[in-house]
Image 1: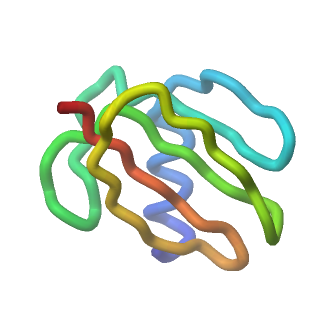
Image 2 (image 1 turned 180 degrees about the vertical axis):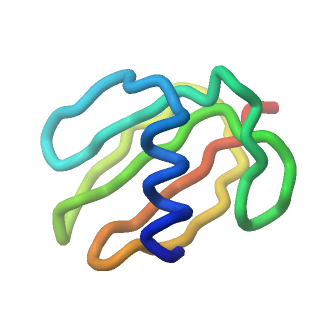
Length: 77
């Protein structure tokens, strides 16, 4: 993902939470996922080398990278 796409995402989405090397954003404006072109629910950015995510629901995930960060796009069932 290039810098302009990343900037567009992070400035268009609603910040939700940031803790332990993980930042989450809510997609309240129905932006399309860059991997599958369907609107996604949340963007999860993993900034550290190792992160642990505890999922409380069944999700489909699309994944890309930006620099050293992993970007997870969640799709709820």
